[in-house]
Length: 521
Image (cartoon, rainbow, N blue to C red; front, side, top):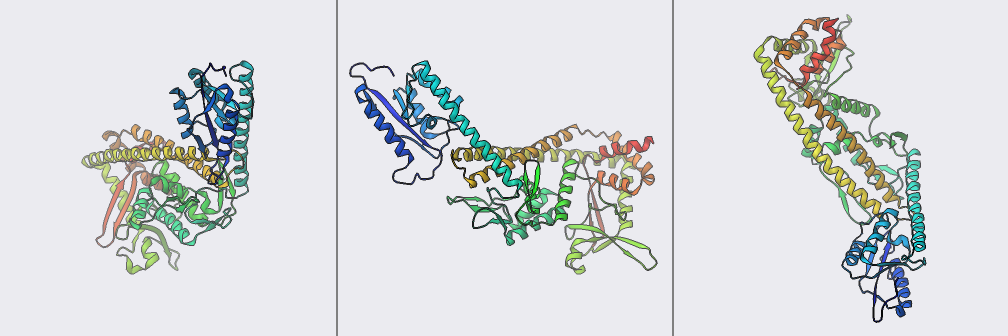
């Protein structure tokens, strides 16, 4: 500090900060104690012309790791406005715990001609030795903060590897025990989770399941924080549904980064259902359809649906005493609720498969039909591209919101003993962001693939004619692959005997690539 001229007053502002909100409700808290020390120091310098400004600059519940603090911003605004000559703090790390931020703050102080004083650490910022001492102290403050962060991450990792729940936002299907340290099954919600998995295996489409959940008015997990804030309870979208279907917690495990560990909690989803769901999700993510198990030659497994009941028709068979096997496709609704509930009930597998294959052959023989299929494929590709754009836009908004929530949690993390609830929320947000970024990358890949799809009528006709040439020579497994490449869904209405076939937009191009080795053989 320079010595004041006669009648010159040095206006001193006291800045106080506390990392957590714990204890701030007390009549005399940490911020008051810091301010009292600052006022006492300023009073001891009254003979130098020091005077304490009446404005309080108190940041309660804000971390020193960044400068996103309301009182700090008001302080810097008053510094730039020339209302302050000296800033007084109890300790250096109250102003900032980041060496880079502190250097910038000191530059702003220098430009404004403002001095800086720490009550408990005597130094003078106007000389080189004082600045060196200040930087050393701040380096240790930043080192302490980084050590705390490392310990926090290590603690979360150790807890996850032992299968312990490390806190955070509750999961649909689970509650938290009285001690707040373990997940316990909520039977009512667990039934909904199992139903959601079954719906996806039935509909095989995220959007269709989202529509069904909206019709049932089912929403995401609802809970109330310790502060009384209500969270969750939002309608499902593709992102939140995908996150639920891929959450390994439901089978009694916990994930830490790329590691999977056995959890202390009970699983609520059958392991086989979980595996089927992940296989279907992965297959749909790649191409919207892929290889299916074809144990008894069920060519249309996973494609055929009963339109009257809006559910899948599954392959079945019966064996006569002579050993001859008869194959059928049976309505899942009829199997579960009774044969009188469905007008279709079942259909002979051989007849249905021959009909579908004949329809594919007919397309290659009819130029008008090829043209119509190509035009419809182009429209569907455009629709899928728009859906991916909408999903990407929604996902980016969610990622931005999760990043903001993450910054808010980091800001509230105490510098001393970590808060397990905040640490759990932090871990959950990091998982959400990682899965969201992973899904965003997949969306970009899918969008690029659709943009590269160009289907010419001549190539389409040639590919479909090639199908007719080599079909009979293909083994059953390869035939199943070809049909799944071309066909998206087959709807059967047994009450009127109507069959509707929907094709994949990119199916013909995939067919050409798949049959190429066969024709050259």
